[in-house]
Length: 127
Length: 414
Image (cartoon, rainbow over all chains, first blue to last red):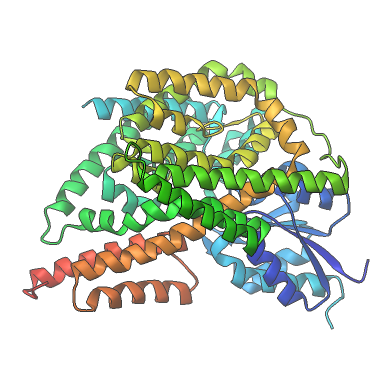
């Protein structure tokens, strides 16, 4: 495992996601903005560790490409029926084998810090 | 009556397409339907999957619909996805779909009539709150430029649009918004091409890994989808139906050319992701590559709209694979698509909140309107945005409208 996590920010909230990841990652995470198909393929090829997609609901455009490229079992939405998942559930999802996360535009500020934190912990990078 | 028939026909056909796995509207459902048609997922499993999807977005289109009386894609087509993937036979899906299409229009007419007869006319206020959006949509392309390429190019885009607007003011033959919107789109195309050329010079032809496409299945369904496009275009041209609140807002005010350009702008946002999603799954988007709306608004006659809609859908399908290859070779275009959708959301949110403040002050003068709008929005934001931000403005108008009527009823003069 490298000393830095590489995350992909994609979809309509890519800007907010990238900024939030950067702030939450405290230098331990590298984040790149990309289109969904490039991002999903980067994860598949091992050039990046995780993919974070976004759309208005976190369910439509956010993950459809990641599902096609990585397979549905690698992808998970960080909300359910329009409500963001609580931090504890996000932590549980991050600890699993998922490599692509879908987030709703309005939930970026709530969901992303919890996700980044849990991923850092999972990889033993948390100071 | 004609309207009910057209909406019933559109509902019927959409539900049949969903039932047969030919097309679905919800982009998050398409991968699962793709697995279903390939036999890797049973109908029961597919139905189960469809339940986790967020349907609330359809509810938030209601204020838009009430203001104009035009039905939008989400409230019509999202429920039909759910009905289609569940129904065991095509005719049952079609029947429910037809009832839903006609019922939606009938309900809308009745509820709208009721709300308009109240002392404080809520649909009129909703329409008033959409006025800033009519002009704000012009800056979607420059805002997308700023999102993708930064502040400098974004500022250049805004200045270009302003100049376009001034030229438009001196061109009485056209709605001043048309030239400005067109200039914004041209600026977006310019910056996209410039960035893509720069990327190619730096990275060489770093193409996306090839994937197996399901284009043949979509091509085989061409006649089904052409009929769908004809119905979509007919309903849109007759101002029964619209794509998003933004294009419908212009169409409802009698500005079809502007509505067409707005629809084209939104298409830039959705087309790249829809193309790849269709190619990977073999399942079409219910509205195709979305260009049908632009054509429907521009057509001079309902029948021409239907024919042109079908023709555009046919072309979209015939060129689907080639468009996919082009997009794979030009990743900047995909990223700009995301930025356009981001800009669309941000511009609408701001314009609708501004519109809500203006409309509610008119309805509840002396400060109460401002107070109500701000409290609805601030409480929504601070408790986790249960109402999606894009719908905060219209929802606030709606809530304030109900309160205003209650106040009127208890004798408080407004």
